[in-house]
Image 1 (cartoon, rainbow, N blue to C red):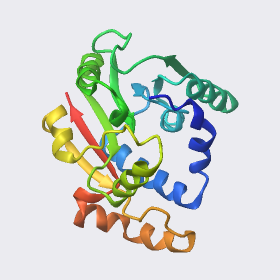
Image 2: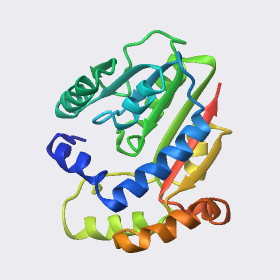
Image 3: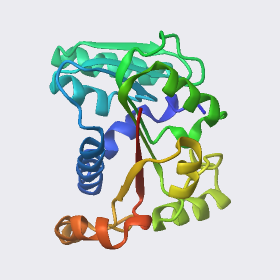
Length: 224
């Protein structure tokens, strides 16, 4: 799927109050499972405009990212260049990685897996390029969340980036990856007014425990 036409909209989302809330809590749970360490080699599959990869570079990791969208990669190069962050960025598919076996300490993919046409091939490639003892961390838009219900309803009436997206639940992700650590985040409803966001900031940690299967953002961690 081609995301090149939404590059500006993609980046602008994170500057909104709700986008900032979502970005904060998605990263919190992702880093908690991934445990990135300075000096490690990381591959970000479906890096987009390098939102996650740039943060990993700031942490001191050796960062490689790939995406199928040319405009996404160009924007990632532009953003990282402004901060003088060293990223290796590649225009490529997740299903045919041009890296040697056992090359990366950490492989991540953030809300891209649900758009892969052949997810099983992508999983095999992730495992192939990850070192023994390394981690594969993959997040998706959770099938069992109100956000997904809303996206499905809207996509019935008009073409959106989610029209041909395949949403996944935890049992389905476990089917791909086997035993994993996992969790979800984002229990604020979609289109939440900005004045109510602090309420969900205060309850997010509790809801991650009490309503674990239903957060909008589902992340799994496979340790090799």
